[in-house]
Amino acid sequence: MDKLRIRGGRELAGTVRIAGAKNAALPALAAALLTEGEVTFANVPMLRDVRTMLRVLEHHGARVENGSRDSVTVQAGSIASHEAPYDLVKTMRASVLVLGPLLARCGRARVSMPGGCAIGERPIDIHLDALANMGAEVRLEHGYVEARAKRLKPADYTFPLVTVTGTENLMMAAALTEGTSVFRNCAREPEVVDLAVLLRAMGAEVDGDGTEVIRITGRRELGGAEHTVIPDRVEAATYLMAGALACRRLEVADCRPQDLKAVLALLESAGVPLTAGETSIVVARPEKLVAVDVATAPHPGFPTDMQAQYMALATQARGVSRITETIFESRFMHVSELRRLGARINVEGQTAEVTGPAALAGAQVMATDLRASASLVLAGLVADGVTVIDRVYHLDRGYEPMEVKLGALGASVERVK
Image (cartoon, rainbow, N blue to C red; front, top):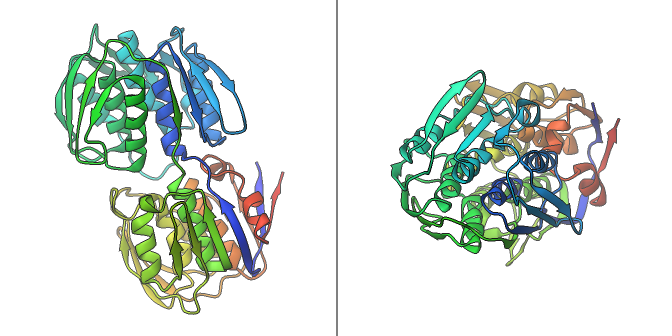
């Protein structure tokens, strides 16, 4: 397995360009199963999870063609298989997103229970309950979700909890269901809005995306479309944290500042100088970094996917930062690894208290999940000496090669085979 070796303490500067959003690309690619027409995607990040999703689509009979570096065309003229097998989807939570499209188009779907990062329970019961509300017969059998419906019917459904993938799955199913469905307590994330943009381009009527109530009038058939994936707000926020830790001046380019309001507000409260434009943000390491408390929350709150990266930043802030995780119950596994680098962190229940500034020293550490990997990279940038991060395949699931992007800024980061 690959490792990253980081020699910390260097001052960084330059421009980093943000890729397309993994969490927007995955549901958008799954939506290509809804139509026989061609769907062409631009700004697709070529990450491990995206490649896995493309293999899943090919397994279902779709033709996948890569265009330029970030362009992909998918055409599912016919569905060769209604099953997403374990060997394909065991590493990726987002594989459950093919359930809604397959059920709506084929009348049946058999999808292995998904894998992904071990950051806590993420049950798909809500997806199944909502699909049953649309007339599907759903059961769990031998590690697979099996769903059947001669024809889905429109529904008025309230999600008991806010769920991003649940909202997206039902949006796709409803887009190919004649009649009007109303979904309440929906996720409001930019990635959900991006999926709505695609579904409208394919011919469905979608209203209310970005709010708690989404109304979809579906069609018996949907058409092809062209779609540009939005920039990855988590990648952008991760590099903003890197800028606040180690950069004389960093321009985070090709991003959407409007999707980063909670992160920008937190950084400003911590004393980080920021200048936001229409598609870029300039950040620099502050003279004095101040501890700030934060709690994760669904969008537009502070994202759980940035909790670990902020914890790395908090190790260098003056005072005690209290970080409360409200989304996942097991998302503090990076704490023990940050402690190996010298971080002073105390965990009580779902709150971590980080006392800083701490003098970090390089050590050998292990990545436990995708965002934890990024936090260890950030900590390694400011640690004295050499930090070696094992199991960075987690990192590759959600970030274009960080050793390349950080290296261009002046960091000493190399991938070790």
